[in-house]
Image (cartoon, rainbow, N blue to C red; front, side):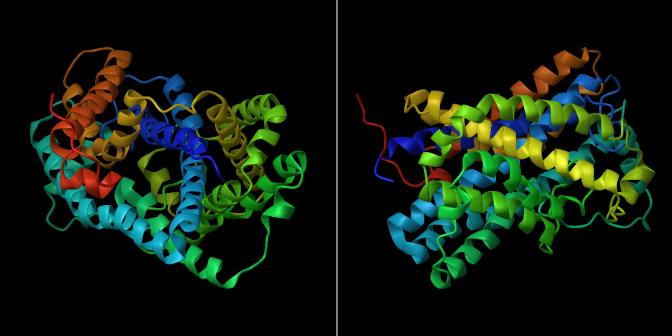
Length: 388
């Protein structure tokens, strides 16, 4: 890849995927599907929130892993395999190690405060309040929280080091030969992973690596790696962008209708076990896969066309997105807990919680991150601003 200008739209799409996560998590509190099990679930909800949330959920993280694979290939080309690993361990794994304890501690503080101070508690917060008063109640399992993607990426980078060192197969020349064949057939490779999981896509938050996520997100990561080697393939997909968009939306409509309208606490326990294999389960997995693939590819095509810009404001937002995503869930939940005791409308609460989280994220980025070692950790060192 000779021109670095191609990287700009990838940077911007990565920021889009990160920041969309704030809106996704904010919307979950105002949809009926998780009203019984989401800690900050509001007492007023709308199915429109679930439609938005789970539509974004089908492609947000697949797109992110495509971009992660793309940048891993770029860094390997620039620094070699060992240099890529060193770079990613410092920018991905080290932030995970540093911030995971901080995030978990913030959860403990925020939930403890909410249990004591919120009057109009959600169903899940009521249950947590009851369990907090029971000394024999089991402790919640330790997880990687919403930082699970950093944990997964660490494994993907290490596997990349092994594959690049020992494999000389030019698989991209075969996979990217025909764009039409690719968009019709390639998504099927992802179905075996999702057929083992309940819909919508669960977050593989456990510390024990979830093999299904390697067969799902790992293949998106591999796709991103191949797109760096064959960047012209994105342009070849352009004639099919409207087909993928329409097919993806139609598939999502069918997929959403097949999902449960509401999940109770008993249901959430049952969802911890793998689903039984059936034609229905196979169909749901296939629909979810095609939506994720088609919408991710559409965003790549349109991103290359319209988001390949290098503006100071765009760069600032892109740089801040990593920090915002790391801290967003504790901040968001604190705001939404406070809103449980208000009488604002659902849309007002959604706007206040999501925009408030973004504002706090941007403000703390400017004050505490951008020109500090935290910023160097997340985005690399930069020159200090020149004095006038």
